[in-house]
Length: 133
Image 1 (cartoon, rainbow, N blue to C red):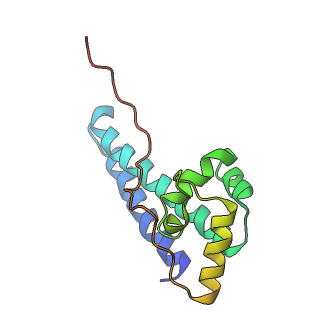
Image 2 (cartoon, one colour; image 1 turned 180 degrees about the vertical axis):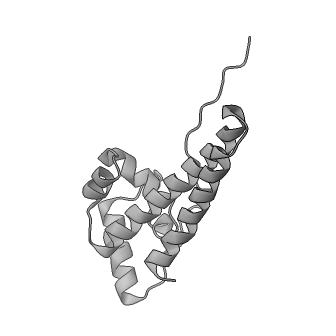
């Protein structure tokens, strides 16, 4: 699948979520659709940043800046991507050395390394309401 084709699939899903939110009866009914669109968009941004740094078109800093993120926010987000998950360090971040290794492995056709300890992908932080005491 080409990169353009790979991006079109999530974009269509985002459009569908937004259309569902627009046709919802009210704001309360639109919220789940908007949340789904936001989650898909976040995933698409992360995967696009991963492809940009892997191709050499962007550094970690410039990819983050292009996405409106601080440099410190890029590493953990790249660690959640399919392309760079295997190159995350023990702290759950992809660093410049991890990107260099991923580029080398991609050029040579090497299989990505297995993570040292299998850890589930960390979901993005979400608001949790306080429980009444």
